[in-house]
Structures are given as C-alpha cells and as structure tokens.
Length: 113
Length: 113
Image 1 (cartoon, rainbow over the protein chains, first blue to last red):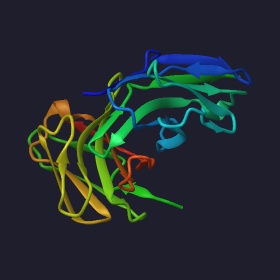
Image 2: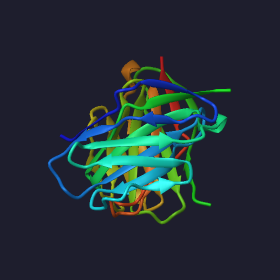
Image 3: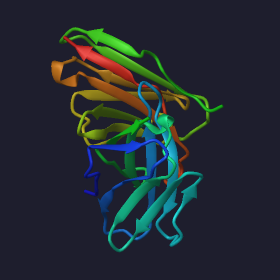
Image 4: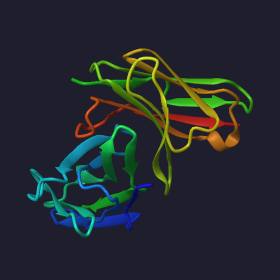
C-alpha cells in the first residue's frame, strides 16, 4: 500500500516569516497527483495546492509553493509571509485513482504574532 | 459556492446503538467518501462510492456500512456503535478523475459512551 509520511507533527512560525512543511510518499507509479489540504480550527478542510507528477515545474499559489522532487518522492509545502490565518492542520495527500488515495497524519502549524 | 454538508456537527450515542451519518453534496460529483480522522493517524478511508448504489471498501471498513441511493447523498452507518468508534468523521466528494480535489464537509464529532 502506498504511504504518505509527514514527519513533523507540529511546526511553528513567526508571523511574516517562511515555513516549510515536509511530506514524503511511497509509490511505484509514475502518474499520480499530490495535494496539500488545510484544516483550520473548527472549519472545513480546503485545498491549498495541487501538483501533477508528470509536471516538472513546481506549483505555486500566491504565498504557497511546493518543492516537488519526484525521484526522492518528496513534496514539501512552503508558506511565505506567514499570516495568523495560516494556522491550521495541514495534510499532504496522494491520489492515483479513486481507489488509491492516501493522506498523511498531518502537521499542526502555529503562527506566532 | 460548492457545498458538502453533514447532518450533525456533534453526536453522542450509547454503545450498541445504530448510528446514521448523512452527507449531501450539491456539486454533481460522482465520487463520495467517508473518512475517519484521529489525532496522529490523519484521515483514514472507511468507504467510498463512485456512482449511485456502488460502494468500495477503504482501509478501515470493519464495523461500518454505507448507502448511496441518490447521487448527492452518501450515508455512513454504524450498525452497533462501539466506544472505539468515537472519532471525527469527514465526508468528501469529488469528480471522478483523481486529478480533482476533494471537497470536504465540516465533520461530525461522534462520541460513543
């Protein structure tokens, strides 16, 4: 079974600084999709950013960007200019097919004012 | 504005009771999912459905069943609730292609006494 590992259960960052959340995954497939989801306290989980494995270019969404290293099976999330509203649980997810999906255990991000 | 709604935010049941958790989406998504979220374990897939009346077991189906009689509605059933089923339950939906993000409901926090 494919696994997704988030090695940092908790992270903290000072407001306006940059933080990187780590994610590694295990797969023998070449075609798949990777996602970062954000779950704010008591609120619904939402998509942060998506990366297609066939694309070499790293995805970027405003202050959020990824470092996708396909050979290393690594997919880290960088949050620049951190804001108080970025405080949340962040989940890394691997999708290959509707019956082949995995989520990591999550990283709780605290943003200090 | 896309929406996935769940019938209850909080639920308290007794051991042995039959429990129904309902999920409704208004996005005409083919896929619907039920996850269980526990601290340190991330999201674990209980069941998913890719079409009406179709269902597939996820990673932890034991003790659960599901029903999908209409495309927009996906129900999770605990036939005889047990204390180890105390957890947060998340429903999600998506279009059938794995490149698509999942949209999540707000979650139901179930306590079994």
